[in-house]
Amino acid sequence: MNYNFSDRINELKPSAIREILKVTQNPSVISFAAGNPSVETFPAAEMAEIAQDLFTNRAGAALQYGVTEGYTPLREITAARLRDKYSIGSPNDDLIIVSGGQQGMDLSAKAFLNENDTIICENPSFIGSLNCFRSYKANLVGVPLQFDGMDMDKLEETLKTEKNVKLIYVIPTFQNPTGRVMSLEKRKKLLELASRYDVMIIEDNPYFELRYSGEYVPAIKSLDTEGRVIYVGSYSKILSPGIRLGFVCAPKVVMGKLVVGKQVTDVHTNLFFQMLAHDFLSRYNLEEHIEKIRALYRSKRDAMISAMEKSFGEMMNFEKPDGGLFIWCGLPEEYDGAELCKISGQKGVAAVPGSSFLVNDRDVSPYVRFNFSLPTYEQIDKGISLFADALREYLGR
Ligand SMILES: Cc1ncc(COP(=O)(O)O)c(C=O)c1O
Image (cartoon, rainbow, N blue to C red; front, side, top):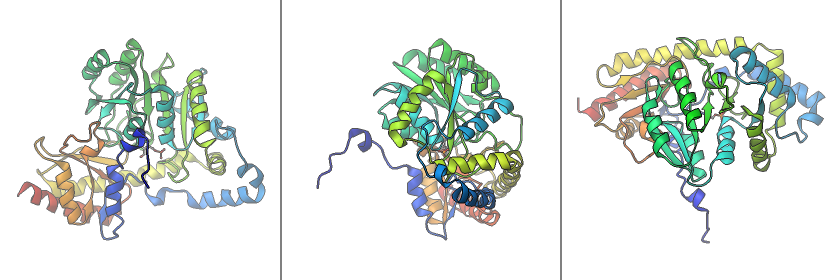
């Protein structure tokens, strides 16, 4: 049978990370490749208690169809927390629940991008979003990411020269893959440029509450006075990713379009888990829960950084992130992180080559991304030491 697939799907390649994760199915491989939270952070006992109550006392509601915008009490509790704690969201905005932050990007792309419209992305950026934008046959243009966020001069040049620029996609806080944070000055500059060139911004912010050091930097959305920011958040990293709960806060007019887009995609997000998350947030102390996650990840970050200090020496640079789940490591420009990861794979340790996150994924990158939330402390020590063996072999030292 010759299947006649669409150009849209034919042009999409399986994510390199998914391919690497296949290797990590082998239990003897130590994986720093996935971006998964630690299983220890899932509030499973509390969720079990709520689930029992939902099935016993409220099954009629929890197992019924719901509205596309989401379960109202969860929308309200989410919107109130964002507004009161972080000044995110104005009276002109609405907040809906989506099936993971990933769906927020998909709905925004669906609402704004015609074929060949331009979306500007940080380079490197989150592969799930890049693939989402590719699936709309958009023109993806990468702007280099500096230590303090997107290069604003290059962004302005791009805004001047590219046609039909509709969206700028950024992960300003603990960026995936780099862990970097966009400075406040650049956040303001980004808003100013977006306003001058009349472009919408997608602010993807799933990691900002996982801060282990340094000072909080306000969300771009909280600085927006024009209704130019679509804010995408997620419960994946602070509750659990398997429940697939994210949220979008955007101007009401924009939200109308996202909601019709969602209606034809999945009608609504899983109602049982929306109710479960709402009950968790209203019965338990989310702030204490996040504080526990932070303590765990802070210690894992520090463990991986010490292991790198000890084993990598001068061979490879690593950036100590103030939060998030990743450590971004780089070799001088002439090297190839993908070659290095191939050698490390043979030694039983997996990490993701930087090229996987490039807007043009045929480019070579001397970087490698390491995740520290999922591996155990023992795996961190052993895996980083094995990776150092791979480095010695690759660099011929
Ligand atoms: C930057 C970024 N955005 C969005 C997502 C999607 O998260 P979810 O769909 O689980 O909310 C991820 C997941 O790893 C991510 O790293």
